[in-house]
Picture (cartoon, rainbow, N blue to C red):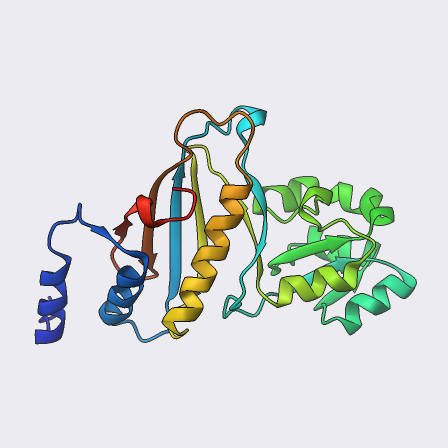
Length: 233
């Protein structure tokens, strides 16, 4: 077992009771102080919501643009033809096509973080339901990934727009930036993420909506956030 440095012993002591509630800013700083991995870790947020997503009127899903970006290079594939295809390429899409792109994906080439399509291409994209659906990549008009404005959708995906979707247990997870970001940048991303989920509160939600909030890093501990400090909490 690796020997703990004095710094890490001190920081572990700071964690103390794992039931302690932290302010958002203190949690961000503590996770930065605790990082020891040799890569730039992601700051992750988890929200426990008062919803049961098995009911359609309690589903929480949408997109949010993180003002400070994600720190990740998102690969984007676009289903489009003609001028729309050219516009998507000009906007920075990594792969653009039609039937050829469909066949490529059916062959297992699915290394994309976002798949976008023009409305007229959904007949082709529909054949990929069982391929893209389980990976959460199926284009959806409600999320803005089925759109005639593919160039704008590509730019949004590349500049920090992420999708959120509640899981069966009523929890939403999201990566909201790298620990190398400034504290202010991470706090701005946190606020934007939470605000988007608060605004997406479904009509069927009963009782307290935002029940628990946690922050963690890729290799770090999970810290409980004082919900009273969180907008909408």
